Length: 270
Image 1: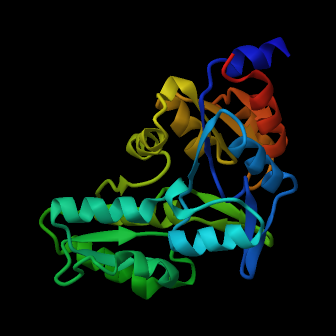
Image 2: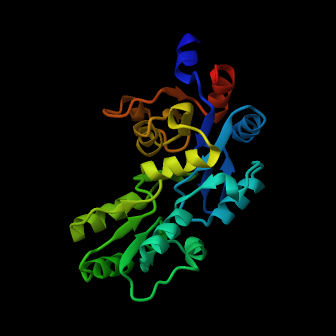
Image 3: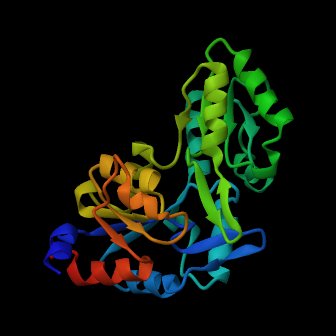
């Protein structure tokens, strides 16, 4: 008990990953992870500030929130930090016109973006749209640019659906980096700017916050590099080998979100 009290002391804000922490997705939508609906409700009734942080780039923010509401979660769009809106802000600020290699369901997020005569490539979790033809087109656009810009909505290696593990955008991002000899700009976890935007939204400093996720590198490692604490749940994409990761050592392991919330409400802000 003393160890948890020390690890969670002074926490005022909680960032929650969505996929693999709140629910497991599948082709039909998904299913809530046991205890997670109640855990979110307990957090909302507590003194802690909360923000949902996702790298999901297969769905628009509205679609994702709608799905979670159907599963029983108390959540609204303005409580979610996601990479597509952040990417649109970057594109507008820098006058970038993207070639989009993204999932059809997230295309509406880019409706106000000029995509004529592209001067960059934006890549997201395009799933079945990651065909050779589409990857090669993105490669060709980048190779034709004097100063190629590749923006990736996250760099996850894989995530978990109810049917099993599936490749994430990071694998395809790395392919384009290698082929073009460039470095992608990542919008989303583990980008420090992404975490900082989420913290700013709830008015909490990094040392007062904890990130709860199922990705030891993107969630926990990224949060810790920003000065936050990170808890790893043994749900979603978690694998037993994560507990022996050579570089990232979480501030704690929990079986699920419900256990994490119970510990937070017992020990945080003391």
